[in-house]
Length: 357
Image (cartoon, rainbow, N blue to C red):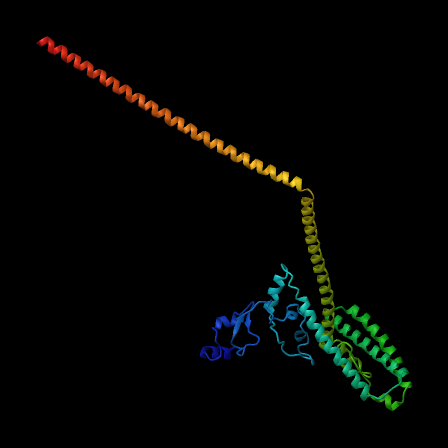
């Protein structure tokens, strides 16, 4: 850490600030194929094609076999625990169907491993002495007992680490029985071939992890192999592959059923539309009469509206005419009164003049 702080202070090793460097979380990480991978970072999501889907499902062989003699190194795709956490949260609301990608990845890896196993078997067949089928069967029996003893011893160590002493003692009793069977099988195998050939190490390829097993391996060697990280890692990968196959098959069956259901609904709707169109074509008179009634109703409604408008216009006209006639009569009466008053005034004036004259 002091070296990092020193370089950060000098400003020669990082292109980001120190707080930002230590607070990089979530889906904010390095670009997997950037030329300046140590300094260039970009934001990606777990659904990006550059993210390892097997890592999101916690089954990438690069992680499982890390630290073993078959360490695959760094995966070509992005691995990030924060992206896995993002995926686990989002997968509760939506199915991303990443199991298919992970299944293809594991299938390819296991197929390569099985091919290596077959190649190793052919090499052993070419290098080791030819033996008869009967002797080969006896040797195979010894190998099977070795495998059984190795698995039981690995189980004993696991139970002892868990503190389950009683169960561990029971498994040890089974180990002793398997050892007795192995001694008998070795005696049968030794008696079936020359002593010089028996002393040679007869190898066998492990069907799980492709490792070589010796016919005369001791219990410690067998326990280390069958309880080792490499063998258990291959068991984990193979079991995960079987689980993914089952999950993918179930999801594909569910999707096929949903797709079939949607198709049936579309076909039913199309049949219903076709039936309605045929019913209309078989009864043209009914459809025409229905259309005629609609047309008549619309015409009658328009006629009623027209009559209503005309009546309202007539009412307004009568009202205006009545008011104009009233105003004319009032003006006529006023003019008549005024003329009568003027005539009275003239008569009074004439009488007055006659009296004084």
